Image (cartoon, rainbow, N blue to C red; front, top):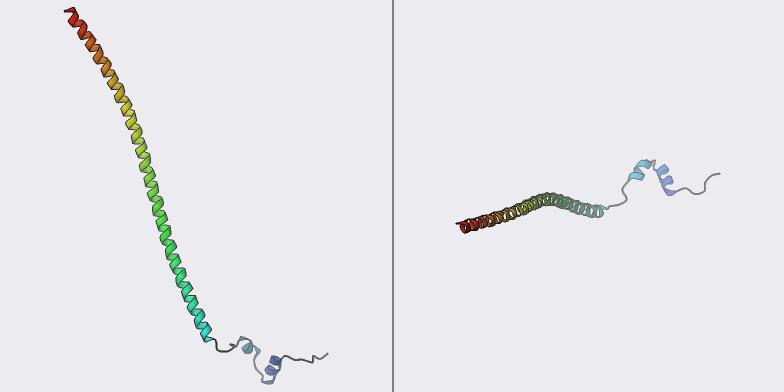
Length: 119
């Protein structure tokens, strides 16, 4: 059977012996305003993306610095705790030495009292 309807484009391509590739890839009117608007929007998005990238890099750097600072602070805290523990140990030793000195002083006074009583 022979088709009774033929698309207009097929008829025009045959009549004017045109290349169908050119027809398919041809621009459909003047859309330079839309292209300019799309290009402007693309430029804005690209600039915003670059700004976000710079901000993210700065935030990552600040985060690394904060982590390093926190690690140093933790180390100083540990050193402080160790120094406080050593200080407490020395205090205990000092108290024990003071108690020992008092006991020796009391013994010396008792011995002196006995010596004076004997004279």
